[in-house]
Amino acid sequence: MNCFELDNISHSYDRETVLKDVTLQLNPGEILGLFGHNGAGKTTTIKLILGLMKPTAGRLSVLGGQAGDPKVSQHIGYLPENVMFYPQLTGREILAHFARLKGASPAQVPELLAQVGLADAMDARTRTYSKGMRQRLGLAQALLGKPRLLMLDEPTVGLDPVATADLYRLLRQLRDEGTGIVLCSHVLPGVEPYIDRAAILTAGALQAVGDLPSLRRQANMPVTLDLTSAGDVGDLENTINAATRGRETVLRRDGRQLSVDIAPHEKMPVLQELLASGAIADLSIHQPSLEDLYVHFIGAGGLAHRGGAQ
Ligand SMILES: Nc1ncnc2c1ncn2[C@@H]1O[C@H](COP(=O)(O)OP(=O)(O)OP(=O)(O)O)[C@@H](O)[C@H]1O
Image (tube, rainbow, N blue to C red; front, side, top):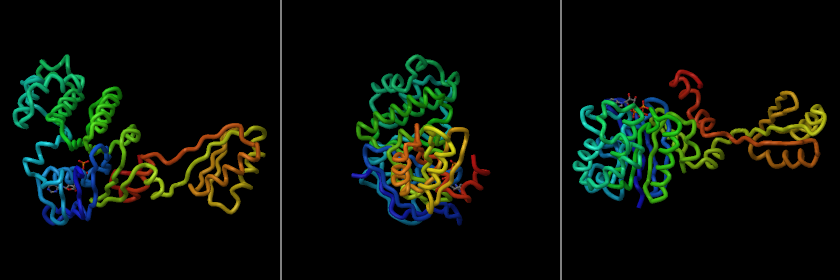
């Protein structure tokens, strides 16, 4: 059974359509990154899956049932963006309160607080917590009752690099135990190794969905070969020019180092020719990163929306 299935979902607030024909599903034991700039429609998608609103058009099922049905909702964990808690209560008291609301066992509370790195702070009032600690308490709240579907809206905001890596490790562990996880973010650096698939949303429309190799195929962006010459750099330049003649490539030179941007399907024949020439001492191949692919798919409109390329 899918964790959720969105089938041609559209949504409008008043007259403005902010989600357009979105078709997307999440499997158990999978981490999906849902990426888009501010206002792209990520939170609206989450609210529909939570059953807080009904889509204007399209069909939606969550954990095999109806979004918003309490029998479904009890298996969903949700961490909203900018989570806030009552400042006079301790972390332990707050989590115990949410455990009662969710019908989860209170025995989980200290264990979950330790799991998110708040073992030493659980009896301190949350007004003394840093933003990162509040975020981790929010995550513990989302993990109450061992959800089958976990949705996290900008979970790494406020976390330092060590806490961010800890969070991703924890998500991987939950994924391996069968939880389906949606990670919404407009912060891409560092996330690539931790997601199974990415969905890229611009102005309410899905531009691309897939794992990294599939997104690379869809984007068909050039691959960069960085080459170090074995002898005279001019000779290597001539060899590259011969190997790439008639192909669409860009060649750059920086001292003894040469870089060639080349279409993915041209990579192997050109590499074979270059290796056979004996003119290369070393080489590395750079595929487009998740950030490169994101910028490619959101296009000029998306960049304008974000105030230019970053
Ligand atoms: N309650 C609302 N009433 C009217 N318009 C709304 C409402 N909530 C969101 N919108 C609009 O819907 C669009 C999508 O917003 P949404 O919050 O889903 O985007 P997002 O991708 O989560 O953005 P962010 O990263 O800034 O949280 C935006 O244009 C936003 O202004």
